[in-house]
Image (cartoon, rainbow, N blue to C red; front, side):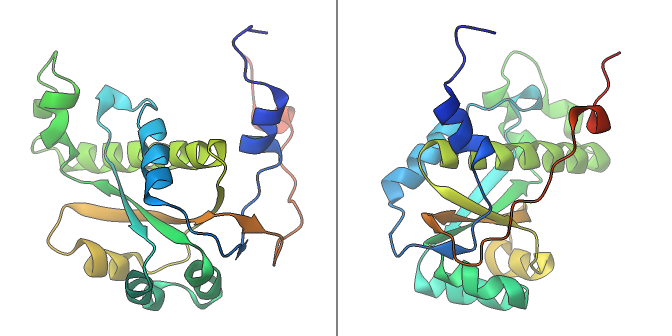
Length: 197
């Protein structure tokens, strides 16, 4: 084991005891904390440092009212009651920023005109960054409630009309309670999911 490992308490916080929350304390998530989560997660690796993820923090009553019609019925109450719902999206024009993000080669040219590669890269790396976001949020003391039960086209029209952004998944953040908390589901054992060749 490396002497650089984080301790068991931190591992419990981020993974072993972390739960998908459905109930929330009436405590705000400050803009300062939101920025701190982003400033931590942004250091996670992406291919060619492409960083396609984009985040919209839906926290005001007015913004939640815009989001609500696009949520599956079972996700409405827990999302509206959460301090903040994050729309985790990816930018289909991410490659325009590669001259800044990956300046040692002409990586932008790899993507221009290649719609399939753009879509694959944006989705894969944007999803990866969404996972980094959840880890960073938990590391900074927040609970998460990720979900995919929403009308993607509706959210795109409501929040991203006229942009190159596409919604991927949603994640409520805040300080969770045990309200409507499901029993922890099992996970696959190592031998069921892994091979060492």
